[in-house]
Amino acid sequence: MSEPKTHPVDGWAEVDFNAEPFLTDFKGVYEKLHSSGCPFAHSSVGDHYAVGKHQDIMDILKQYDVWKSKFGPALGYLETPGVLVSVDPPEHTFEVRIVADCFSKEVFESLREDMVQFVNEQIDSFYADGEVDLHEAISVTFPLFVIHKLLGFPLQDEDGTSRIPWIRDGLITSVGMMLAPQNREASVASLDPSDPGVVGIMRTQQMYIDHLADCKEKLASGEWQNDTNIVCRFLTTTGPDGAMLTDEKIIGFMGFLETAGSATTTIMLSNIIYRLLTEEGAYERVRNETHLFPITIEETLRLDAPVQGLFRTNDTEVELGGCPIQADTKVMLLWASGNLDPDVFEDPMKFDLDRNISKVKRHLSFGYGTHFCRGAPLARMEGEIFLNAILPRLKNLRLNGEVEMEKRIPVLQGIRKLPIAWDVE
Image (cartoon, rainbow, N blue to C red; front, top):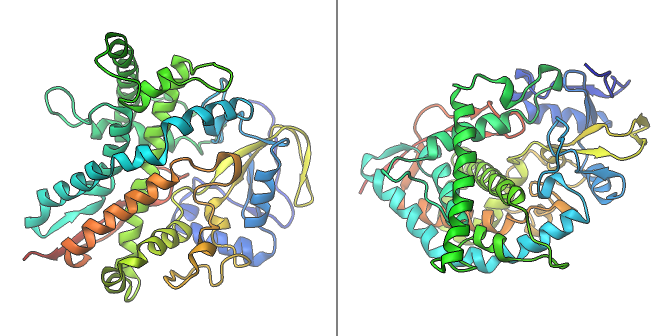
């Protein structure tokens, strides 16, 4: 095992980001970071540092020549380049230009009618029951439906069996390892091949390979056109220098979009409803004042950021909060902590629908700068469609049992079960 790159620092909080105390009370940890006057932390277990102050995070993200993404956004060090969040300019610039053509607002808007129909059909399927686990019924299924519409392949096998269970198993397992310490040798190869999560990862990877081959075949035959789906666009869109994405990169994009485009939005949707049902007067107010939908979405993203944070790695030795940091050290930028910075957001722990939305949008839940989330407009659209369907149709909406928090994926924070009930008319 290699020597640690980091060490405890006097005055810095010592945090195990995988441990129960953090997973149960991470906002309390962030509050203490801010109130202490030293918003830096260290993890001996993970051998990394963390930054919790909004301005410090922004400063790091602006230093493109120092803080790199080349080793990936997770705690482990990527051995081969990934896509988007795992590469730096000029490779990142090339990828973004291709994605911009394939992942545009116009493409998103073209799916609106299908998205509205899907959510309402889901509600139709359980409405008469008067109760449901909304997380499983819509928060999980809706974002996956959207991503699969974009990618161009169904959420069911040919026999009609849903692919969602094993896609989710694979996603939870793979993303769940993002904060796993390297000395635990956490990798898919180290897990039991019969584990449902490993099976899900393998089946999902094969699904991407098969779909890429299908797109190539149908483009060649003329059955599908360049704009049939995003994968077809990837196969036919050139970068500024005429170069095209490799097959490996396209498969990487499919995996990235499935993960980043579904898991985070799933968390956002359930968090929105949870906030509305637990904050006094919020549900009635938002249900009656639909112009509050945008601030409801943004304030939930700020207060309940789906992603705790992602990593950057310094190219050269730098100083962080007075502490020398040797080159190629993993440093976690805590989006969720930056969103609770009292120097940026007044009374940051309060869910406040009367905040100025332009100020709320300073939240870091979609990142910042070069790696700002390209799917942010899509996530916001999904939130709007979700609220437009749920609130008018499910009258007297209320919690209906214990809400279970998701702790299997430490880098994410959200809900695992959201039981609700309503009045059936």
